[in-house]
Amino acid sequence: MSEADGMEDAVDAAMRTGLMVAARIGEQLARMREQEQRNIAAAQEQRARQLQERFDAQRAAARAQLAPVGREDWWDKATPEMIERVHETATAWKAYDPEASQASEIIRDQVQGRYGIDVNNTGADEASVSAALVRAQQTRSEAESERAKATAARRDEAVAGAAVAGANRQDLEARGEPAWDTGERRQQLAESMEGNGDREAVNSRLMADKHQGTHPSAAVTQKPSLAKTSKMTKHGSNGKTLERGGLER
Image (tube, rainbow, N blue to C red; front, side, top):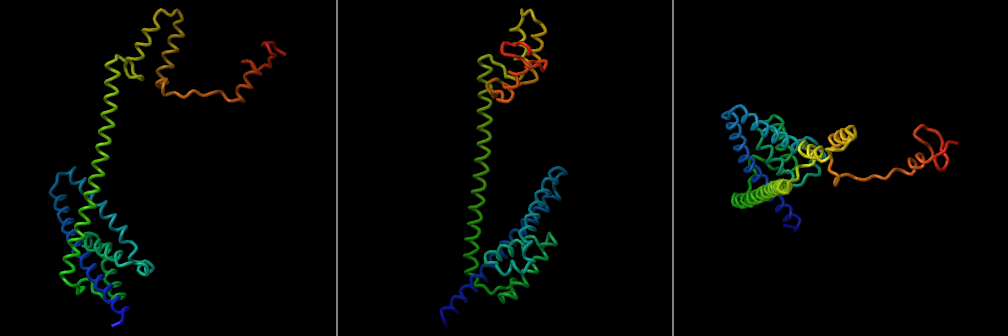
């Protein structure tokens, strides 16, 4: 036996094992789909709707993953790992989605025609399959654990942000400072302006304050443009040209 023949045999054995592992995992996922369907049927209306929406989203993702298997160019470039993934997904969903069922048939025919392997009976060594299955399940568990940690971290960050905002608000209240855009602060402003003889000016100030509703510290001071400044120096409010000193020309 040549070195090339030995390499081909090794690749063939690895692919048979990989396809068998994919089928086993797909069967496990199919049982999960079955349990999800039972949960939907048993749940009350609102909960059933939520479960069904999640199920539909998972099915849509599976369809997207399986969509390329109908193209010859995909098969021309597909690696064993890519084939194993679509075989796993098709096995998991073929009983619950007609598109997945059709994809499963295409995968079976393509693997048989291109590699001479029957996906339903790969002939893989059972011990190799069992060992590979354990590794695959461990990898999947680690990935799910990492996702859970990332989700928890995002949740903790959101809680911390809310706590800081609450602490800042309590600090303002402890110093007797009401939030900026509130009726309480505007009432304090009105009281502070009592005694001002120009009532119209007071009302205008309060009205402007209500509509703006932005704390001065958050405002951005803008300088007038050069063009606007130049125009203002040349023209009065009535549009007439002024000499230096304000006299009409």
